[in-house]
Length: 603
Image 1 (cartoon, rainbow, N blue to C red):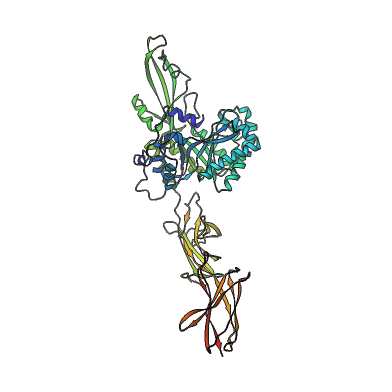
Image 2 (cartoon, rainbow, N blue to C red):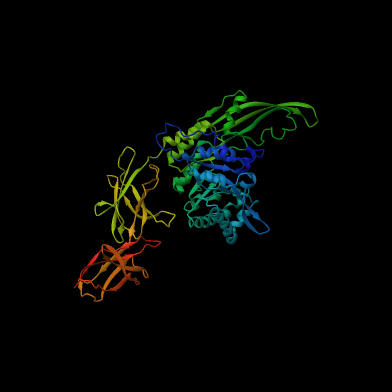
């Protein structure tokens, strides 16, 4: 079932626009980080923030930001504009939240350190998107529309939730749609990666195509694996038409196993539902006309939020049972409906109803798959639906499989002594860094990236790599061309968190090499030559002479040639030892630089 439709079932009445999201943050139902949590929990949680439930979903995500690597605002839909004959991206957030500019929740998410990968759904009619992807021109137009959405809003990527292929188009079209879907993913991936953006796809389950049951093979996991950064599997809605578990453990594990057989497990996220379903399994009597269509065996199940499950069972005096095999909870109860028949006669019916949902134990078992197969994490549909016990179960599991923290220290040395002053261009310095666990145990064989960022740059760049020795340290000689900041960076792995050393400033001054005669006759012209490094042409070079303890400019500046070379002609009328040096003024890239002092004997 399409996510948007599923959510509309849960929210039959349109929620009122959020008046002030910031005020809502003070009343959050999710559990805050426990005070005794000694380690940082693994960021196993991701999930959706729908446009129509910002009031509950956003605060729940913010409150658990330490568990979350990324969030998927459920805010956009792809539509087809017949007048323009092109696909367009529709903003669902703005009309649902007219009082709160989109910048408000985005700022809150960014301030919480969350990666933002909004979801875009397929809002077109049957086969429309499939046909758009089949045509190279319109396919590129769809790619451009999505890429423009990401770059215009500075999102970290996009999450595709194109469920129309599975639930709207007929499965007889899947073989042809599959090929066009693959081509589309490749093209979109290339466009996003060129801008350093992520591509996530959310799909129903897929099984090994070599087996009898293939699942929704139109999504071609094996073929798109190299081009996507995230795969979020909708491991829910197993039972829809009749009562049963939403996502039984064996069914969930089977699709996980196939996913990680075709792509790195770190890309895979297993879906967990924040809702339950409630089916009518038996009816005795004649139901009132106003409920007759929905209170009957085979009718569409009612949907409830997880945080309301306990109250629902308690209100009918029944006790939920946890099914170990399915990893889910269910209970059965009777509900009486009284009213009038179509003929206006009083009537009563009793419906036997069965509800299934996932509770805290269910969440723990799903995160058990994350640990067992080293998955990227779980994806919660949606934030704010879960109860406090469920939130705490996620937190406890995340702490239980928390990665180790890496403690790093770094320093710079030159000529075996600590760097304390600017370096001349062309000088070699050494970056020394040590990496340990919190208990001071050295980390051996750890890949370290040496990164640099200069004053006019916004991104860190890798300039060298090294691997730690048995003592957990590295020593990397560096030859830098300009002033910059340095740091040592290690990637996050299943075992360890990402780490950054402190940022170390390095000031590089231009080198001025000069040469002059040892002695000259009084009043005789002589030349002082030199080279400025790095070699740049047109740089003004000024000769200075020491007179009465002060350095005085001599003559007009000369400029360097293409090799950075210069020649200065001068004279001295006073016999004795004349001291000279050459100076280059500060500019936008370099500090002021001066040569060593040279002494010329004036005879």
